[in-house]
Amino acid sequence: MNKRLIYRVAAAAAALSIAACSSSIKLDDPAPVEDRSSMPADGSAAAGAGAGAGSASTNPAGSSRPVAQLTIDTKDPLQDPNSPLSRRSIYFDFDSFAIKDEYRSTLDAHAKYLTGNRAKKAVIQGNTDERGSREYNLALGQKRAEAVRRALIALGVSESQLEAVSLGEEKARSGANDDAALAENRRADLVYQ
Amino acid sequence: MKALITALATLPILILMLLSGPCAAQMRIDVSGVGATQLPISIADFATDSRVAQEVASVIRSDLASSGAFRVIDPQKTVSESVPPDYPGLRSSGAEAFVGGSVTKLSDGRYDVRYRLYDIGKQSTLLGESLITPEADLRLAGHRIADAIYQKLTGERGVFSTRIAFITRQAGRFRLNIADWDGENVQSPLNSPEPIISPSWSPDGTRLAYVSFEAKKPVVYVHTLATGQRVAVANFKGSNSAPAWSPDGRSLAVALTLDGMSQIYLISASEAGTPRRLSSSSAIDTEPAFSADGKFIYFTSDRGGSPQIYRMPASGGEATRQTFGATYNVSPRISPDGRQLAFITRREGRYFVALKDLAGGNETVLTDGGQEESPSFAPNGRWIMYATRSGGRESLMAVSVDGRIKQRLNSNRGDIREPAWGPFAK
Image 1 (cartoon, each protein chain N blue to C red):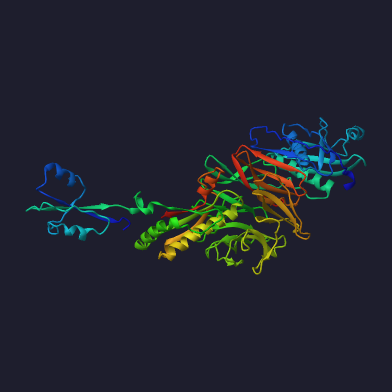
Image 2 (cartoon, chains in turn orange, blue):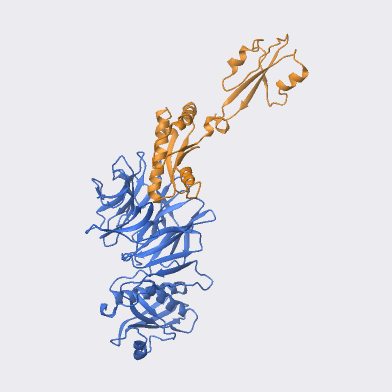
């Protein structure tokens, strides 16, 4: 199961106006699942059903005939642009292979995701700028990829989930020769398989 | 024949091999500089009953001229090998050697290419040969004649009939190419949307090892040119790169990352097998190159804090540092006679081809472009071809090991890089 299920629970309130109801009940949601028994007026079931990052609305007015709405949504956090997992690139200083502190939260998020999804695999691609020997740059890119791989393993990711490879200077994003372009190419990218 | 060679011309020469004909030639050679001595040689047009003959004579002329060892004189006349040369006239033209010849179409469609080489001073024949050649190999016949003349007059083997491999990048595609030494007669055994680097010729010239990124990671292949058959000889977890042939053609030294960092291993050149680790450091070890006798492997390592060239026994073991003159010395290549080490050195942020006499220890910078990469020795050890960049374009150049002569191979095939000079033709 690659997709992570997110449950959303919403409560309907008969006492609210028609206009209010129309904004909180998504009639056009696909395959809604209703669960009448788990919907007390105080909305405590919403927390219980929230296995993921779901949100629930409570029923403040208290209806005699409450109807709770539960929506099953398949959402991959890898596709979520607001997730810290959307950051896949780790940038390095010139001639350095140390992971800077600003990338700790990114690596933490990826480690958490990979440890929670043991079937997932990722390739870490090291890159360098275009100065100097292609083969030596390939080895330097490997050193960057390896630094990221070791950091993820230290955070609990299994070795079998990761492969560190190098693209050296061959896939430079920017061919320019200024400092910004050189810095852009000194990076390792996480690529999920 | 050394007596024939005299010190002459001191002005730079410029030779343009302009392209003609339908299969023409995407490349062009510019030569600058001259050798210490230049032998004046007159090469006549070859007698013929067909149109292809002059190509043979012009190949011989441009080969010998680009070597820097000759000053080529075109007598502007046709002289067959079957007629005695006009010695007085040739002597007055300043020539010390003369070549006449003929190209005759045979009944089976092949050509009989004949020539004679004369010593004008002694009024004697130095060489005379007949080469039976298919039409597609007429240029090759010219290169072979140039090799024979070069060897007779300089005492050294010529490289005009050798081939080079190189990579081009154009319109988002990467091509592995094979061409005559002068960049003519280009063929592309492989093209790919992903990068190809580090081509390396097998010692017998029938196979190429290279690194292809077609699997989204570097994998080492061995490619048989005649059949197009390929074997992924190193496709291990991590990166696989930097193939270098052992002199017997049976093994490759490669850089693998089985233990995290790039280290040097020995693998079979013919099948995917079990690698044997040769280097052992906690740093980067890559770019292996066998010594000419196969007893040692030179390689790049940053174990001392900066990338330098080291040498270890070919079976592995303790490594000793070889380069000292700069903080970045990479890409070792050993000359065919085993006496010299060519490499790339960084000086004040720029990258040059350097040469080190392994016995004497001196390091000499041979180039002045500043963005040099990937040196490759000619099989006679006289030239080093390399990649460079200028004006945003990548191109190939060759420099004579004495640093006096440079040749640029221009191409309309986009960026051109990663040269590997093939072995002598069998």
